[in-house]
Every structure is written in structure tokens, then in C-alpha cells.
Length: 375
Image (cartoon, rainbow, N blue to C red; front, side):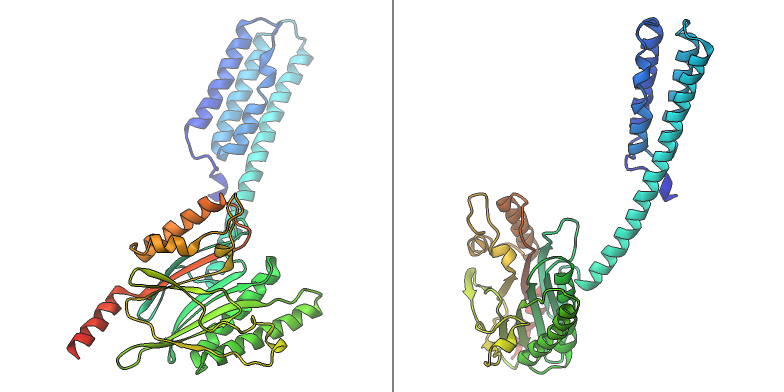
């Protein structure tokens, strides 16, 4: 039964508490009536109520009542019957209160566990667990929310295999809190839908823009600030011979291309305004063609990584770190990056931080090489 499980599953905690009660009671019985130290034992069953299961708290409370009843009846001869009765009643009252407190705590913990489970399930449905796999690519990485205890914040990402090729997206919603999360969910859902049916990245970005515009209209009607979203969209299509792709940046920071052990900062497709601000420019968004190689890696991130500051005020040197770790496998690289980022900032991130390390899966790469050799 959930309400009967305590936060402290160690069996030695109640043993220690009972030992404290017995030692103090023995001390009280052997020092005479002048020193009545057992009166300070009331904190022991209360501590058990905060740390132990209900059954263990009951055992500690029973030991407390038995020992204090013995002390009040047999070690204080000068007390009158009424005083003894008050002392014994007080010990029963403390024991009863500790049991009620324990039961209330366990019920609250069970409720919190159920609520956390539901929230975690919802958050997992919004952002898929990393690594992502779509067709022949895999995307390892991490996402750290600046809001403690939250799985979803202002960063979004997705990778989908579509009739138009493999399409990836990473985005960063302006602002924090529930309005930012709501805007991110709307844009993410729009990308997932549009990526399947729209023939170009420009059309996908246009649909995302329209979705965010509707969200901002609803927000303004409710007195909530409008939001914009920076986003980077990538598309890779399998073509005869060499794959081709497109990149479209909606005000997002550059990405990094790792090719033959060298790290290159790429600003392909930059120049367009963030989603939600497209109406401010008469220039349409235009993607840029790229020519990826089978062994290329792409590293995408949000500005929560590149603008993370250390204790000396310096920005996190992502490109420098990548250059030193290109020999690592994607899973190892993302673990190293996350640990290094937390160490660099001393665990004090000011913004959501997301990193995606994207490459062709080893099986897909081997198949591609085999086909090329056969040709």
C-alpha cells in the first residue's frame, strides 16, 4: 500500500530511535527525580513520523509510550497521581500526533508521486526521449530545463522521416514559464504535421509561423505577452550518388558541422526573422542547399548552451570543446558535454540548454558504403 511506504526504507532508523528512547529512559531512572530528561524525548516519534513508514513509526511511538509510562509510574515517587496521569496522557498524545503526522505525510507523498507520474508522462509525450531515430539517422543529446524539476521548458526539438526526406528541427521559445511552454508545444505540433505534407522547408516554416500567430492572438486576448521562436530546420534527401539537403534558419544560432575530425561553424540559411516576427519583413524565408557526406556529424544547440556563463563571466566554448572530443561516440560526446557544461556553470544554468548530435547510424553508413562499392 503506497501510504505505508516511507521515504526512509532503511530498517536501522527505527532501531536507532528506539535505542535513544531506551537509553534516555534508563538514564532518567538511574539519576533520581531531580533530573527528568525523558521529557525531551517527544521529538523522537515526531522525527520517525517524518522519516519512517507508518508501521515503523507505530513501533517507535509504542516504545516511546511504554518507556515514558514506566518513568512516570516508577521513577518519580514524589509526583501525585494527577501529575502522573498528565505525564502519561501527554506521552499518548505525542504518540498519536506522530502517527497522524506520518499518515498525512505518506498520503501527500503518494499524491505527489501520482501527480509527478502524470506530469512526466505528459512531458514525455511533448518531447520525445533522446536519442531520436528517424530513418537512417540518429540524434543523441540532452535537454536541461532551467526550471528545477521540469522536463519541458522553452526548448523544442524533433526529427521525422517524411516522404520529402529526413527533417529535423530545433527551436528556442522566447521567455520562460507556462506561456513559453504553450508556444513551444504549438510550434512543435505544427512542425510534426507540416513536415509530412509540405514540399519545402519554406512551406514548413510558413505553417509554423501561422500556428504561432494564432497562438499569439489568443494570448493577447487573454492579456498574455506574445512570443517568438527561433528555429533551425534541416532536410536531407537521398539522391542518386550524393545526398542533398537544405537548411533554413529562423533567427536561430549557427550549427556545427564535424567533418573528418574538424569542427566548422555553419551559418547556412541565416538572415530570416524568428517565427512570430515574419510579418515584420517583406523578404520571404529562403533555405540554403547543402551537400552532406555520409560520415558528417551535425551538432545543433540552443543559446542556453553557447550563452551559458562560467564564474568568470566567460561564455561556454562549445566549438572548442567539440574540437577536443570529435573522437568520441555520440552518446559519449553528449555525456561529456553535459557534465562539462554543468561543471562550467557550477550547475547554475540561466536558460534551457539543448544539444543534439546528429549522424547517420552505423548500419545505414555501412549500407551506403556497400552500395557505393557495388556501383
